[in-house]
Amino acid sequence: MRALALLFAFLPLSCRSAGAGALASAHDKPFWRAIVAANYAPPQGADVPELARELAATAGSTDPELRDELGFEISSRWVRRPGILGDEDVRALLNEHLEHIHEGLGEGEGDGVFLRAFSALHLAQFVARDLRTPYLDDEQRARLVHAACRVLREERDRRGWVVGKGWAHAIAHSADLLANLAREPQLTPQLQSMMLDALDGALEGAYSFGESGRLAAVLAYLATRADFVEPELERHLAQWAREAKEVWTTQPFDPAAFHKAENVKSLLKDVLLGILLDPKASESERKAADAIRAAFFGG
Image (cartoon, rainbow, N blue to C red; front, side, top):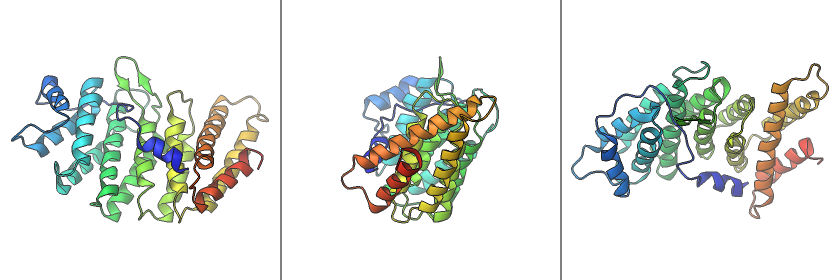
């Protein structure tokens, strides 16, 4: 399992997405490109927290370069690199993105997806910082879990790549956030169960841009935990196996049920392969693998 988890931990940052409705940037793209060219170092003498707030406002842009290659890439490095932004600065940015992650949630396809998707992706970097050097409290971590799970349950815009506007990927980016949260030492069994329930909702839809693999990383990290809620996994496996069988007995044929069953199998194959390829798989990972094989792959 750790092999799969590590794969997603080191995904290139450019494999992400973008959003809608951003505020206008006070600086032009050549200004931000110069920062990228300087290995993402902040300009000398600049008000870095103010620049970081400006970058946060690009999360909803429909310009993929401004939103993704500049706004997200610069911000993510400033958040994760020691000594650039203080904890209070990052907490303020975190609260801003949390305010936007549900904006327009439940609507059909539209440019609003970019703000939700990139808010989630920015938040994933804040959790990565917390995993390295804790600065969040349990209430803040729980709030992040609730926010990301709600997106997986309620997001209707399931697009991946949008021509002319780049990555939407609200489901994949929220999965990235949950995958980091699944590694938090303080994660309670209740929050683990909530994540598994949210995965079930996210597995509905016809995906073609790697979403199942990103969702698999959430389960992969959960299964590495010594306190993993194995009975909850077994409950979901039984439900998914039952639903997969019903695909072939329900009349008329239900394409949505078929897509979910295929997504489930893809996710579980990724998780199972990660465990089997890891010679250092933990006891909880081996138990998860046994449960997956028994439910879906002939024991």
